[in-house]
Length: 190
Image (cartoon, helix red, strand yellow):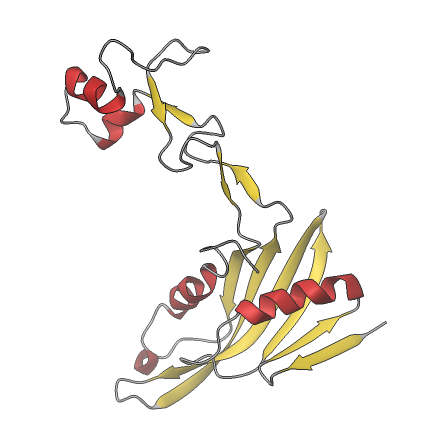
């Protein structure tokens, strides 16, 4: 069964699966409107290899150096829906701690004694990994928990249709990627 829903004039959801209607509505509430993205959003979803992908299509109205609109570019953004709230920390690989040797990457000018003071409350009581028997420190990326919040919608790709004109500037794909990448990542709330 084909379903179409419009809301606030800024987006149109097209889905054949009513269970994804809520998901598409959540994404639609996060998508930006204005600053060149002035048209309606058209949203759809599909399943591929067990993952749910959401596609958001719109038009970007580029401006020239005098502040006037000069060209319209159609673009598409593809998001992966993450059902889990958390994932293993990519820095410590889910352990919650990092090996002492990682400190060398970030503080190459420190000697061993300075690092021991930095990593341990007491020089007589350094923290050691039971598995590796080497000094470790709590991962500053995940605060020692071993996992980090996973965004509900993870931007996979932005595709711009058409050639970029010099009057609009270049790197439109990069600009749109940066604009659309952080939806819901600040608080993992939708």
